Length: 60
Image 1 (cartoon, rainbow, N blue to C red):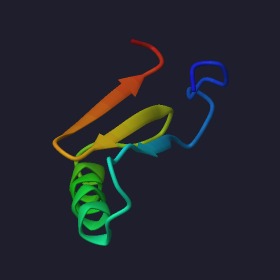
Image 2: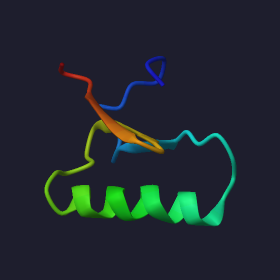
Image 3: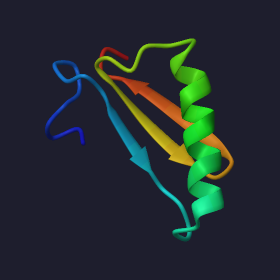
């Protein structure tokens, strides 16, 4: 991800789950949707995991 950067992109969402489970995917996507109402994805990398969400902005 850092190789390509995210500053000039519309944003990147990475989903990291221990298994491909529809319920778990829905849970993290609903969490991301709620966060999108508060923060723009533009130029950021969001890493969604079962119990946390990490948001990385290229500028720091």
